[in-house]
Length: 169
Image (cartoon, rainbow, N blue to C red; front, side, top):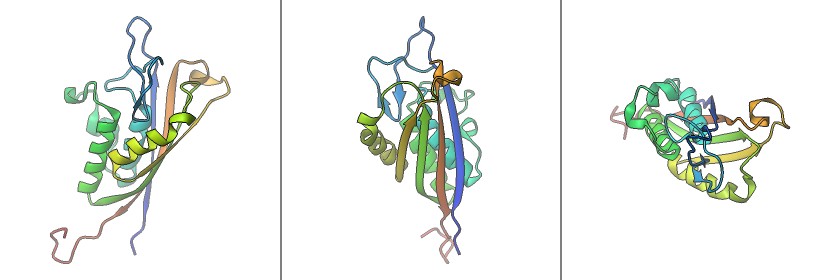
């Protein structure tokens, strides 16, 4: 019997300082006119949480293990690129992705009108269904004060049995 495995990923980014503005990338999309997030890569906490949930489900480390700040080649990297690379790593480790669900917490941007677009972009990167929801924290905590954005993701993966020949085919 093949049992699925689940993982959880969390990512948090503060807004970039006003004296060092950054573009906002969230859910794989550019949000014109919105204040961007600070980070080693593009700060897309939705894509980052999704990647982290995949790693968690497989027990193969976390976002920092694979794309940490000690890896200069990932400085400024797109969250979509990181999610695609995470999916590749997961598959190389012998797993297939069932789905990923992400919820982010922020006052802005208004996500509903672009939800389907975001889900298409992230699903294409992961090669599996990615759903995204958004909520606010009713003015509480750092997200409520408008200091940053947080995201929580869950992922379902399942091990791919090796072929009888042992060559993966």
